[in-house]
Amino acid sequence: MAKKEGLKFADVYDELVKGAVKPIYLLHGEEPYFIDKISDYIEQNLVGEDAKDFDLKVIYGSDCTMGEVVIQAMSYPFCGDRNVVIVKEAQNLKGFDALTEYAKHPNPQSVLVLCYKYKKVDARKAYVNEVTKSGGVVFYSAKPYENELPKYIQNIVAELGHQIEPKATELLISYVGANLQSIENELKKVTNSLTSKTTVTYDMVAKGVGISKEFNAYELLDAVRNKDASKANLIALKIGGDKVQIEPIVATFYTFFSKLCIYHKYFKNGVPNDFDVMKVLGLTSTFFSKQYISGAHNYNVFQAIKAIDILRKADERSKGLGISPLTTKSEILQEMIYNIMHCKGVNDPF
Image (cartoon, rainbow, N blue to C red; front, side):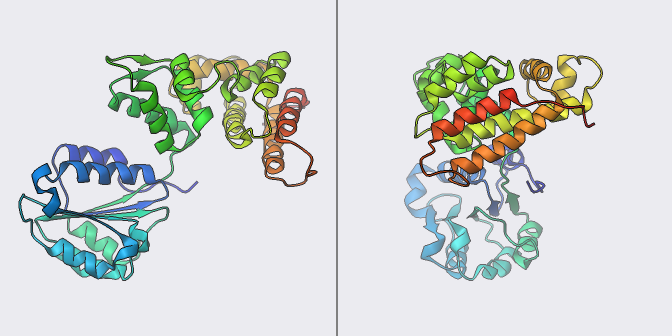
């Protein structure tokens, strides 16, 4: 994954909440969630309800050119203090370079928001430099790293007025994956009926999202990690219908075994304490440290590396590569679990 650059989401969002509004927001990158959070806040809060019909313009990049956007941004507010122009899908705008001249002298009574999703703007373009020089914001919205997901989930739950236990966080990640918008949607469903500050539990997530408490990817990994073959085979059988989504299961297992390789590299002499494991593996709680300590007892580093190769092949097979048309996804999943739990180890390569 590419290195993240520039401002962080919290930097931009917190400034907005504090009232430090900038003349131009050029929001770009592969992760739409952060772009939507910033633009939604601006849309909902920077223009009063009585002035929105006149001073708030929400337009789409496929419906206009940058020249037309600039004309809108040069307008002054009719009723309130600000004229706000939000361009959704700004990556579809034609004539983007027209932003350069406007950015040199932006309208002090306008806020222009450009939502340039799913890719990066060319940092060499003159308009990028001019937006920054004029006091505007150029924010790159990157896909979150795996180890960042628990923190983002905690933040989302906090915004909803609650807390969440680590085990519930892991269950949600194993079910939804790294899609932050889907994670937020599921958490809203879980917390919708809560009337006071509550700690969201594993059972609450399972019930609210519609996941079996006993038969899910999180419990499957737990059984495999503990070398509980009968439990692992039962869960794989229960969740392994022809429509089973193998990709998120593979992703959950891949994260675990990748970090287990790191664990073995750093902790070769004896069992470390929970806090050292948390720090080295980039975990958010010592709750997760114990999982890697127990997993390391059952899988040496070679077995962890072999497990990653097994996961890669299962992912390919789930996409129809190198298998008979008669092979079911259930069979692929069960074979994956069997191969991981029975792979042989050799001497530690580190």
